Length: 481
Image 1 (cartoon, helix red, strand yellow):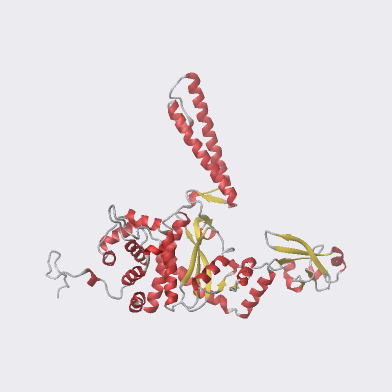
Image 2 (spheres, rainbow, N blue to C red):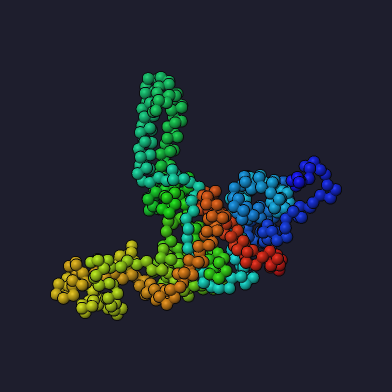
């Protein structure tokens, strides 16, 4: 018995298939098209949402938006790759009606519409709320680092900038000497730095380029000094070397994920290397998205007493893992800070022996107040060997100690909140980084480019999440409604 054989490639058919018949009714691409059709692109701020009367007609931004959402769902982010898919992929042909925009048009759409892409992502969250897919008010906050376009070779610190400035000054001095010798001897073609030769005009041109380069190096040094960072990234100064990326330049993606639906209700791209100052902005963004004060859960990287207190004043409850130093002197055998009683009326501590520790100084950097016992009290105290090995005992108290203690009490009452955080935030990050971004670095430079890419990635994740939860028929009906 022979093998199965298909139709001959040159065989004609009387009734050719319609393009619509080649895409199944429950295909995800149909949901992408329905979602884009439900958006008010002009209100969201997309460029060219209203075509001009004169000139060549532009591509509909809805077509390009759908192309990008479909591409990110398929782990295809490159504009050149999307251009190829427009000519070869049946789903892509169906989505755009066989349009095939060139890669420059595709890339320019993503570059020009950062704010509109973020607004579209927020619009899907409101669609999920209106459809009662998001019913809870508890969100888990977490961050993850993603590599920027720039490579590690672009990272320069103060030492590298100083060396570049020195080489630049030496080359400028050498060209100046060459120019002086040419002017004095009235000769052409003398040898310059590195064996270079040239006329006086060529030397002056090279000298101007070196001076421009020197000014750029000086500007970088000033920018590095103003930012307080240890290094700057050439070509992408907003990116920061991230330790978790083996010191590669990257960005910090922050997400707030609702714990019941596991949908990302708020996200942001920041340049900071840690999460220490991200609790309050992310909690406030999540509360605005949910249109009510929410309950937030975060790990120890977000432990910020000032922000916990600010959220508490807004009615936003937080469960943040503690990140506080313990007394490890004396192999942990000395009195812990909890052994000292704080007296709010006198702003002092009382030690286990009954002696007072008075306020000594304020550390604004650490946001702590240092209290000290009298040396004479410690010298006469029989419990000193159990308290300190120093001349006197010091105890620190955070400026927002009440907020930190309240947070610790809430967490002690509900220790399972940390497990809820882990099972909520890990899956979205795994999907975005491994399935959507494909474990690759970003394709667009600067914070605006990173925001555009992450908005598309988050929108693709949320849409796929709802599609898996409810199915294509439900989504078509909900979007039409």
